[in-house]
Length: 172
Image (tube, rainbow, N blue to C red):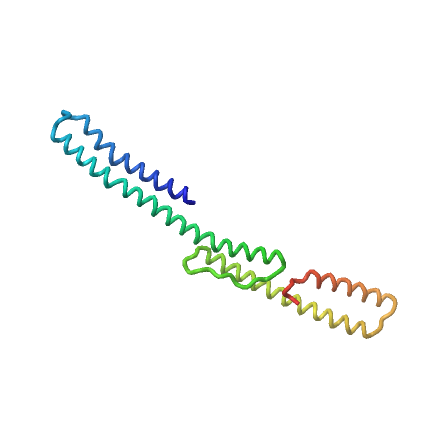
């Protein structure tokens, strides 16, 4: 990032130097070498040379600083969003991520928060459904079923067990 900002500033400065200094230097070809015109042009060229390069150095430093600030404003929310994605992949539903007022990607963070809320609602609904199934299973077990009923009940218990294992860790 620093290299890119520096190269952009230097290329702009190089172009500006060519556009400023080449026309002045081209005037040295006209007239006699010892004339007052040449002396005036030489003084002007030295003045420009002395004042131009500090401006170039300041521009390079300013470009690097602004590039680093912009990069951090973009990178920081991306890191927090990436952390959220990793938590989701690990089966967790994290809380909202914080996006500072000057950071980029506020819209994406808002959409991520909406997605997380939808996941929370989905898992809550799923948890309620699993609880209804558990309750129905307890009622069926109280009936002391035999034969096919007992086999179906065992199959339901196995399916329920697998569903509980696949549940989000913070769902329980």
